[in-house]
Length: 58
Image (cartoon, rainbow, N blue to C red; front, top):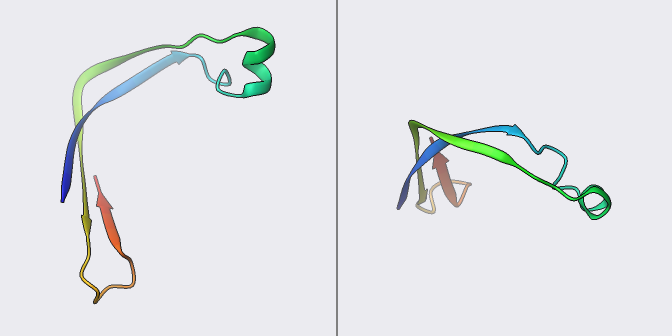
């Protein structure tokens, strides 16, 4: 089982700069920050009784 504690992030601008055709022509910049709130994410492999091989919950 894998458990992570991930902070929430807020992005203010930078959307679209991850598209290669855009940032090759114009460059790119991103401004983001984290806040003091967290999300816990767990992942585990399920027994063979289930159709799915793994489960992710948050």
